[in-house]
Image (cartoon, rainbow, N blue to C red; front, side):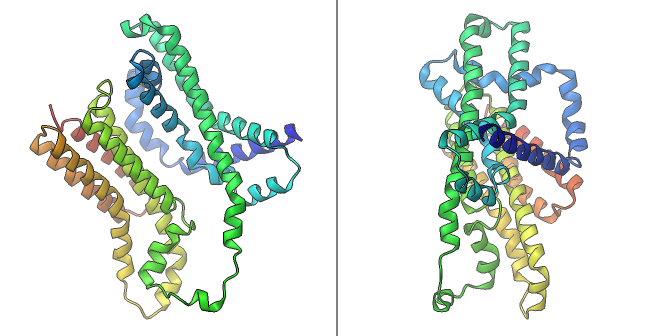
Length: 361
């Protein structure tokens, strides 16, 4: 049963990864056109994937441990993002009904997590080889500890990813009970929602959209933490361009995922909403809702810069305008137009990173 369970879980994982590759097929030419020449010109760029865990081994523990943990958490994020695809609700219910031991289920979660993060292990191996060939001073001094920290970081990411899958599996029973709760007609009609609230706001918090309201809130919290660490100079070893890249890429990616979910949701309701004698205000309200997270988080980062750092006026103004203009531009371009959409968010991340790296001297 253990071998069969792992084989079935790995087959499901392969199907999910194939779906992702098919969905990215239209975006890959644009990404390769932007990043391909740079990667070919300098293989050392791939080595940056393993720099944080190895560099953490050379720092004092107060600086090294948070950096190492941050890398492990970021690397485990794909498992959290894919948890509902890797373990659909029906699978979770069936696994609870079948006579599998808790240890077998946990081992299968770890194996699936390791399979998804296998490309990351390859990047880490390339990183170690590149630094072994170039032999910088900081790497030569403590290279055994740095290699161990690199391997431990990947292992920690696998365990965090397995924990995300276990959370998805164990939470299925609770979610099923909530969904099957009997409600009387009086309870259902006790509070009649406005159209914009029922169509645009409530689905996020009922978990009918992916990402849901909790995931959006977690993304905004992560963006706020990045902004705090960036503006306070918590880790001077991380350059400003890297902070700007992480902050901008997180907000643009969150906006892009929200747009895809919202457009798919409204597309299913298009005929119903068009048949009702209602105004079309929900259309512009949906665009406003789409722009709120990135605009709010971006302006929060700008406020932190103004409060804490000796900022430069023009780069800061351009960065603030970019945080407002990017979600507006993305809301105009439909997510179904993958080529234009991928090109838009690639250029947006590049420009915001370039401007963000010049906010202060």
